[in-house]
Image 1 (cartoon, rainbow, N blue to C red):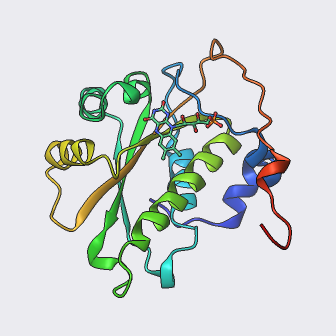
Image 2: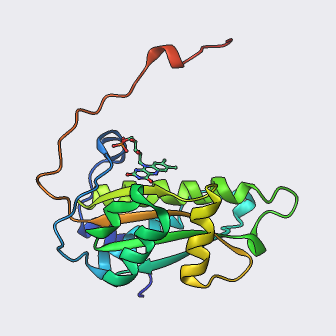
Image 3: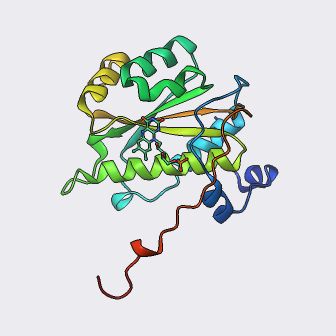
Length: 188
Ligand SMILES: Cc1cc2nc3c(=O)[nH]c(=O)nc-3n(C[C@H](O)[C@H](O)[C@H](O)COP(=O)(O)O)c2cc1C
């Protein structure tokens, strides 16, 4: 893939970042229309643009477009992963323990979560839909994905992100989650 330039992002006239965060929703039904390689590149670039523990970037990504493999990924993760059945792309986000911060390796879980969130925000900004499909720490799902992709020992499945063009039939749920009573100022 070509190296990213800032001009490449300007081309998309992306929505404001606050608006993108506030309006993102999980999308579980897709039209079947293909996601462009350029948009895929932006999503992957966003994944790898987040902070990570001591800049270790302890992640790897398996990009899947093959329909049969998408179905196998759905089966391996159980019913909650059904969105993969109509997705154009599924990305298995994996932790790479060989790159994890040596004195606190478990930070890889946080680093991979940030990558997932960045991908979902980027997809939304591009007008695409996505849903996060949890895998780690549900070890049966983790082991199923390890088997499916024949992963090396240091590579741990963390999550799957399903992507596609949003189905217009997808319910337009209101989205206000702010809860004042969750916030404590200065003391508990
Ligand atoms: C760690 C994690 C795991 C999730 N796993 C699933 C899943 O397996 N299947 C699914 O349909 N949604 C899954 N979701 C999406 C949540 O259900 C969704 O984010 C939540 O209901 C809030 O809705 P919203 O994303 O539209 O704001 C997951 C989200 C997270 C952060």
